[in-house]
Length: 220
Image (cartoon, rainbow, N blue to C red; front, side, top):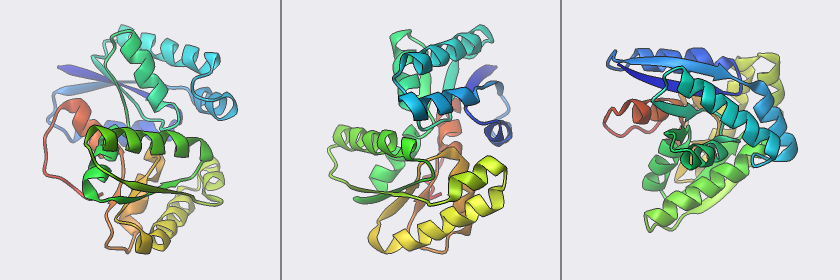
């Protein structure tokens, strides 16, 4: 049985990803680490700071010791650095938003990235540019931060958090070929968007990629 490790920076993600794994083919177990300090430190000092790198490596060590054969970092702010640290140590680490970025580049040229914290915007835009280069595709990326949303997330008011993100999706639609929800926490907002423009989120795609399942392309 395959065992997938998850590195979260918020406990809210634990149930989300465990449920997604539970709906796969039943041959996957999970092991999870939650370290909220990693996001706080990355927002303060940057994801490549010594303190964040040390925290990532400590988490990777614990996940590998717990039998994880593949690891998903569900934080978009530190996900790129987690991939770098994993690669340097021959550990199979995937940032949660990589499959989402690949789908977005396939979906259209004008990509709008929605985020609820500033620290996510740079890593997500850089990832989209990396994926586009590797596919020989020209893209135009616009970044929008959903004002006031994060404070609702921190208070645990997820309904209002999602409502703000959904409203921003609808506002961005007229100038977008595809909309990317930069953080895993934003995924549920896709259900409440009224636009016909594809709105792409990361959790399910990341789980499918980690598990190795192949499914028909989706738009959310």
